[in-house]
Image (cartoon, rainbow, N blue to C red; front, side, top):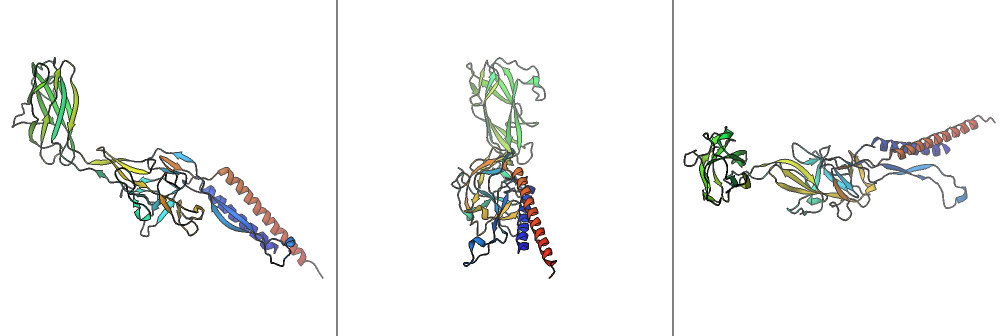
Length: 415
């Protein structure tokens, strides 16, 4: 019987060695949770047995218990590197035909260049809840989960139709002695550049040149790229006049230029240009206000995640769109989760079904952006456990050797 007692000790020690080795192998795995091997003694007894004379029959592995203590938090600077401080797991939809919902503490996410979805290294998509414009979730539960996906563009393009500048022109400016030429800075006194858009939302530049032509009199020449804008077929420029107090007297209404083809190509457009509120004073030339309608299509410029888990996409046209709120999952008994590899867990009958929510809600931890949770393996502790498991294995091997020697001695007894 002592053979099997020692054998059970060898098997138990070997299991513990495997567990410790697995922990050490994953010391650098983000979101990894170490395991601990628990043992129990084996006692064979009956109601008639004398409890003072019972001899144990070895040991048995009761289970490998996962330890869900929090790992070290590492700052990365990437907005899609997420860490949960406290309880909870990220919910991800695995890739492939048989997609399932898995749970992980590894928050190293990125944007898939093909689908624009937020995915992990395995291509599994981060799950969340849709939100309204104020960031409030508009769905709950497992049926409300969506894949967080970024739109490649934002907004509808529109051509610029109106530009307004409120200027101050320098009253004591000299009058250029040469004919106006946009390539010759000596032929004008000041200039402004304003971004305008064509019907496809492509940007070009409207440049206005201001030429002092006499007392309280100026001429404005307007160009889009190298094309001079005309009024009634004339490119002579628009006269601008002021009264003795420096207030503008002409033009009193916006100047409408003839249709022109933008430098970006596309459909011809017209443009109304206003100088309402402009002044002429002894102070230096300045632009006090600028307005221009029209808009471009915003290209995806970045993505951010705040402490409430709201994922927002930022676009080149200034738009910010809330895509959703990161969903978190928790379990009544996390130690009963089934490990499936790739830092994933799945629900089991022991763990119970996932309870879903969001960061900072009851039962869920806080969410940190630009941070990753490392493994919770303590190398020193594991090395000590490794030594102890090795000693246990050696001791049980020695007991087995002694039992073998005793058996050999008995076999050698002669009658």
